[in-house]
Amino acid sequence: MTDFRFMKQDFLVAGIDGGGTKTECAIVNSHEECLGVGVGGPSNIVYVGIKTVCESVQSACRAAAGGLGNTALSVRATGCATLPIGNPDMEAVVKSHLGGEVCYYSEGEVSLACIDVFDRVGIACVAGTGSNCFGFGEGGRRLNQGGWGFPLGDEGGGSDIALHGLRAVGKAVEQRGPATRLVDLASEFFGEEVSQSFLTRLVPQLLSARAEMAGFARMVSRAAHEGDDVARRIIESAADELSTLILSVAGKLFAPDAEFPVALHGGVFSDNYIADRVASAVREAFPLARVACPVHRPGVGAALLTLHDLRANPDYASAVASDCILSLSKDAGAG
Image (cartoon, rainbow, N blue to C red; front, side, top):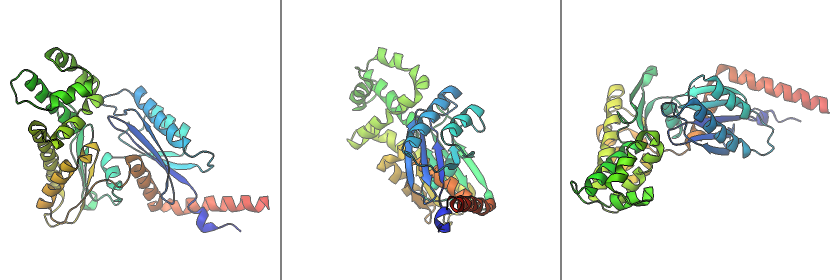
């Protein structure tokens, strides 16, 4: 006899999260279990062409799907974040590897999903290669600030931290700024001694290899934790920029005594000092705010949000029932 309750859960969803440094795809079943994760290259259309976007998405999808082995379940839908909406070439790549319909989410929606918030009320600050802040108020009110891109914006993001770090390196090399451990760490990061001529050659790469340059932010964090005053001030400034961004958005959507979640999402917040400094600033202004770092990877967050929206859709129950009736018929025929 067919177990109807089990069959109601017998399908997959996928999530794809694009970014300036990497693209992640995750496949999740309707028990909310992650079955496979794959990673590809950058897919921010502002900085790379659609060909690179498609290649990155293809690599991520292929790697994620490879983890399923011979699983016969089909992907019902794929939720995409920070990818070119409606681009036929990209959608063709997704459907060729995963199948199902393609839907789109903002980076903020996925960031909230990564802390298990699916009702689209709260604040999501994203600080990876760049930075951005998304606000979701009651009654469907939405607000987005920051995200202007490098070099105009991205305050507190990896590329911004790296740029300030490299400026400090240049000043130290020319002895017009304080000595800093960042000089040695820059030599380690780039694989050659830092000099005036090296820095001159580095300038064109700040835009053409933005994601790679942003990696130097890790060296700035490392130096700060090792006690370097120059690096510490850079990290403090980045945290304060991100705090200001969050408070600006939150102040326009919520009262000081409101309860709401705040997601701190992205690689910059893996520095506990930055995350703690930002959380303290937010709680000082909004004592009841729940500040949290992700409990899910971004691809998994996008997949879980897709699953949540499928369940909330009035057509979901009838679609599941149709699947079950079809399966029951097949079982009866086989008997």
